[in-house]
Image 1 (cartoon, protein in one colour):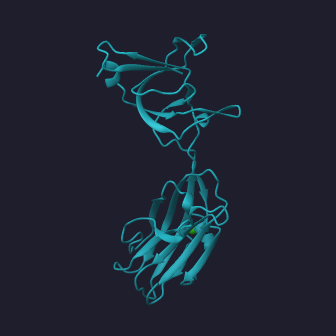
Image 2 (spheres, rainbow, N blue to C red; image 1 turned 90 degrees about the vertical axis):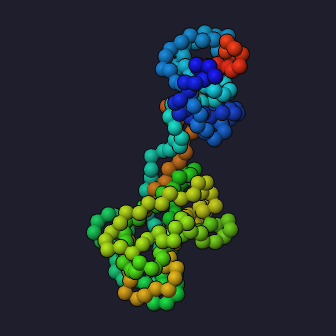
Image 3 (tube, rainbow, N blue to C red; image 1 turned 180 degrees about the vertical axis):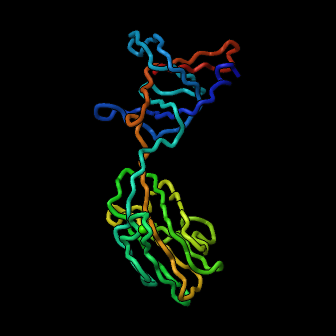
Length: 263
Ligand SMILES: [Ca+2]
């Protein structure tokens, strides 16, 4: 392995396979590769034989496409997070002890407190998030609250799969909200890709459900509940550079190649 190839240790995001689209190019989904990124201006000859000055020079262990894009950094490259609150709540089983859905919209002391019933399917509440951006691919659920119940009771977070269609557990854990004495902060990253779980008509639906038998006098407290979304950024949305020139040269022993890119 050449000196050049051994020292490719920086995470670099690569958008390859450029296809003409309108005024620019569309690309395959970003992949993370290793390389060495040098912020230096160097004269190079572009594909049309013109001399140009580079923005940066990058060494890689793989071939890349002219008009692909490179970005110094790791995946995922996400936009800023955008918060969404539940537009409606459906009570499948149970009832409101105190508060209202609006109490889940801020982190103040006010809670929505939900009742548990004695017997099987002790409670089931759905929270419906609508008006979600089309191109969002990252979803994180935040819940500040607590289950005031019994250590043996199982309260789970579920999500509706519009494709199957069926409710699915968000985690493989026995309990997502164990019995507690005070408020906790919970965070759940939802599956990616999220496509089957988001409907243009209904948005995204979460269910908080008590699975085995329950007992009256137990409560589920929600102080703050929101869904953070972010989208995977395109090369033109980040400080990336188009690949202007690429040169592949055998090393001295002809066992490897030096791959050099001018941006
Ligand atoms: Ca609140």
